[in-house]
Image 1 (cartoon, rainbow, N blue to C red):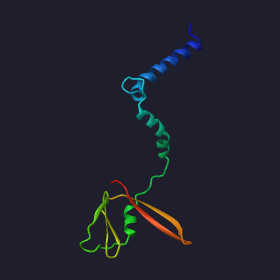
Image 2: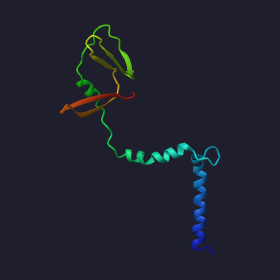
Image 3: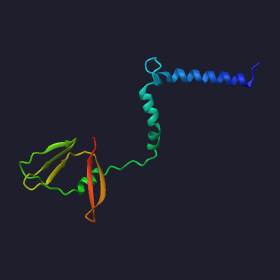
Image 4: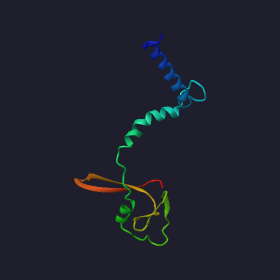
Length: 132
């Protein structure tokens, strides 16, 4: 009565029905044959999201990095402008020195680059503010 082929066909139809009924709301837009672009984006980003689980997370060294920056009081009357969330900067028109202030709790990313100028190796450290 029931042989292997009939059981396999019945199992395939059941699995297909369950898959379509459960995933159709995610895959298609409003009961139409148009594929949901958010679903495609999720599928496209799934491998990188999975691999991110195994990448080491950067430690928060914001306070340590900001503590290494020389603490200088800007001259009075210098107008500080907001350049990023939690960061203000100004330039003294007389001395051309640049001053920055960081609000407490501002997260930063530090990148150090080495480059060659006139045959001499130089290092530059960039402090990039991140969203709070």
